[in-house]
Structures are given as C-alpha cells and as structure tokens.
Length: 427
Ligand code: NIG
Ligand code: FE
Image 1 (spheres, rainbow, N blue to C red):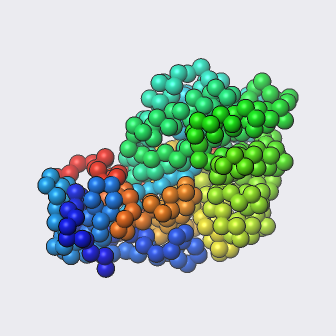
Image 2 (cartoon, protein in one colour):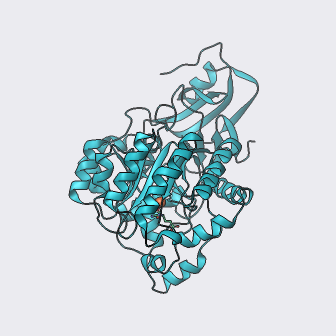
Image 3 (cartoon, protein in one colour):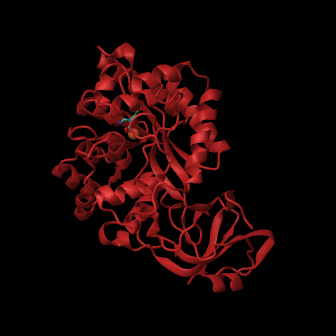
C-alpha cells in the first residue's frame, strides 16, 4: 500500500470514502479488465497541492499523513469517490443554440435534411463568424461550468464552427484562453474540416486546400492545437479528402482524431486506424473490418450515445462487439448545439447502460483511464494513485453502480480540480 512521506504535508484530505474508485492498474482498460476499478473500501485520499500524495484505507491515510496548516478536510460520509471524469469529444465553442432545428426534428425532419437545406453546422457557422471572441468566451465558459458541475475535470475541445481562417483561429484562441482561466483543462483540436462552408459548396476540393495550406500552418505557428479532426462522412468529406487533410496535419505534428461512420458506413474507422489516429469517434455504422482495424491499431473508439438519443435513432454504436474484439473504448457527451446538446457525462453513462449494455464499471473505465488515453493525458490523469493529478469527484451515492441507474439528476457532491474544491461546499 502506498504510504505518505512523513515530511510532506497534505493540503487536502478526503476521508471516510465508502468506495474509492482508484482505477489503478492497466492503461488502457480493455475487455474484462474494464470491470476492475481497483476499489478501496472505506478509503481515503491525501493530496499535496495539485497531486495525489497517497491513497489507502481512510484510517491509515489519516494516521500517516500530516496535514499542512489550513488544509481542506472533506468527510465523504460513506460516499463514492472517482477520478475526475474526462470528456474526450466536445464542440463547446458556438454562439446561438438550435432549438428551432430540434423542434423540426421531433416533427419528422432528419438531421441530414436540415443540413442539406443550409441549417445544421452551417447555420452555427454563419452565427459564430459574426460574434466577438469575448461573447464566445462568455458562452463557452458557462458550458464548461455545467460540465464541471457534472463531474468533468478535463475535456477535449474542438473548433469547427468558424470554417474560415479567421473564425477558426478565433475559436481556438477562445479555447486557449479558457484553458488558462477556467478550472477545467481543455485539450484543443483543430476541426477546420467540420463541414464545407456556404461559399465553397460547389468547390469542396478548394476548401480542402484552404484547410491544408492556409488554416493548418497558422494553427501550427500559433501552437493552437494538439489534435486535428475531420468529419469524414457521406456528403461531407470523403475518405480521400479526409486522408489528405489528416496526412498533412500529422506531418505538421498534430495527433489525429476522426468523426467516423456516424451517419453511414464509409470506412472512416479503417482510415483512422491506417493513419495511426488517437481516436475514431461516433462509429454507429462501423463495419466488421473497422472494428478489427481499431482493435489492432489501438485507436480509441469514442462512443457518443447522446447523438443517437437526441437524433431519435434506435441505432447505437456496437459497444459490446468493440469490447469483445479488444478495442479500447471510451464515452463522451459530444456536447454541441446540433446532434447532442448536453454537458452531462453521467447522463451519457445512463444511455450507454440502457442502449449499449455497458455496466457502470465499464463506463467508468471509459470515462477515466480510457478517456485519458483518448486525450493524450494517460500519464497524468484518469487514476487516483500517488503522483497523478488531484482531480476527483465526491458522489452522493454509496455504490458506484448507482451512476447509470439513477438517471437525469446530478449526484455530484464535490469536485476537486488540481487539489482545490471547485464545486460544492466543504463543512
Ligand atoms: O459530432 N458530426 C459532426 N459534428 C457534430 C454535430 C455538429 C452540429 O450539428 O452542430 C457531431 O455530431
Ligand atoms: Fe462531434
């Protein structure tokens, strides 16, 4: 059992934890290992500043860890503690919301019909281009507040509602500033190829050239992104166009992620595996060969059941087949104004249970260690073990299996980010 060094004093102690979900053990969690959460019953966690100092049984931790002057002590009163959740796929930078389209969809129009008529992503693009960075920062910050309140302490955040050099850079600058200002960590992704903007509808290849030759070099120059993403989809970017964009991004030093096989089976997962992408996301229509390819390449399969739910579809990503094949799987909100407008990762965990057959343990593996791999933070985040980030959530439940079961309400009691309480009271 890890013991605290006597000379180091804890700045935060969480004690009397009914189930301390540490996630110690293999990274990523694959297959049956997903069900092992490395739980310590009646546990305690000591942190020093922004790092975990020690985890163990509550009494042992309390006895062996001297407290620094003014240290925060939280009595979890038998509740559950998990690592801070990680959301590996969000589109948080947008202006107006699109409830008008939601109403059209519940009365029968499809997402693709609305998009083809100039709505969808393109309507968000026209709106975002008119807004100032200040306005966008303010709106995005409120979305981050809601993610944090639901237990999320790190997200991947995409641009993609600008689709011009100026508006994409503006979006990525907003992400950079919020990463500095907000408690949540944001891992930035350049998604210049989210859609073809109005002015290039008849000239898609020219737009692809602009993404590669104008946008990408500036994104790299200003160090605005870690990842590059593309919406590889029927009527959006073809396999060839996606390959061109992502090969250029990879050569420029970015890591890759893909929107793949969301609305139709186009071979996006196979392409993601071929290019060594970190993630392939959506995968509702992934083929058998796509599943095999992801399992072989280690590309994380990020599943987004909120989109099926919100688009009123009965078809969900084949989670069980992906797990059986040995793929690394993860889960995300896909928080965006069109296909999945939610900042609640716990709600997504409920959808994953009911529609994809994931157990609570599997979903926790998806949203901690596996999500850490999906955002490239697996050496620092996603586990509560000595030396990792002091990001944790105290839940108002005695058994972690309540997480998917008790749905549609927020069961977060406290959120601790970098060793500081950022949500909830401390008595
Ligand atoms: O991940 N698939 C593409 N992008 C988003 C939808 C964006 C929107 O409708 O605004 C998604 O589902
Ligand atoms: Fe998305």
